[in-house]
Image (cartoon, rainbow, N blue to C red; front, side):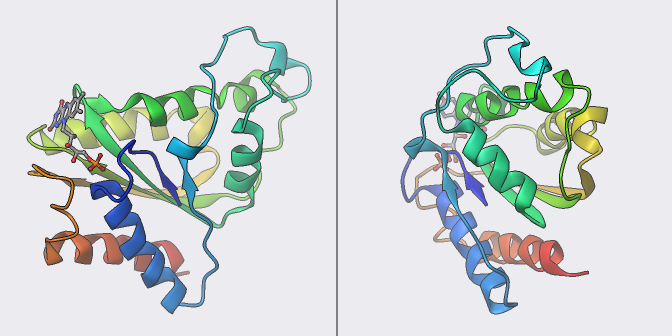
Length: 181
Ligand SMILES: Cc1cc2nc3c(=O)[nH]c(=O)nc-3n(C[C@H](O)[C@H](O)[C@H](O)COP(=O)(O)O)c2cc1C
């Protein structure tokens, strides 16, 4: 699971915690990546990774990528800033460059992906389309068996999701879907 909000204990974290508890009930092992605790530089667009699929930046990204490849499923939460996933998540996505630049790159296990987007009033279908635009790119999609996006609107305070049982239930439902065969 990947939580990318800069706000510790905020909406994205509450949804990820609910999903984590649910998959653990089903016996799954979970690792949570808190992006705000990681050092992840912007993609340089240098294509140095073309040679061997390894980014030249010495930061936390390659470790996170290894965890992503090893996972049977990914659930990721991102806040919406300016009708787009916040920079923390987009920076992580941009760093996937090595997975398409290197022609011999081994993509790892195919997996389900659940996306939680937290926002106040952005249009739900547009935000789902924003995720769709990324996850249906051939280089990304070849690693995915199925994906679902849940958009949590009206997150007016940092504890909206924690205080909204229906939102926590939607997060649990995605978690159940992620672990089912
Ligand atoms: C810089 C900034 C830009 C934002 N832009 C939007 C936006 O375009 N649409 C929206 O619905 N909410 C927007 N929001 C509100 C956040 O999406 C909302 O507070 C979200 O629930 C935060 O989730 P978190 O508690 O996990 O950080 C913005 C918030 C910030 C700080």
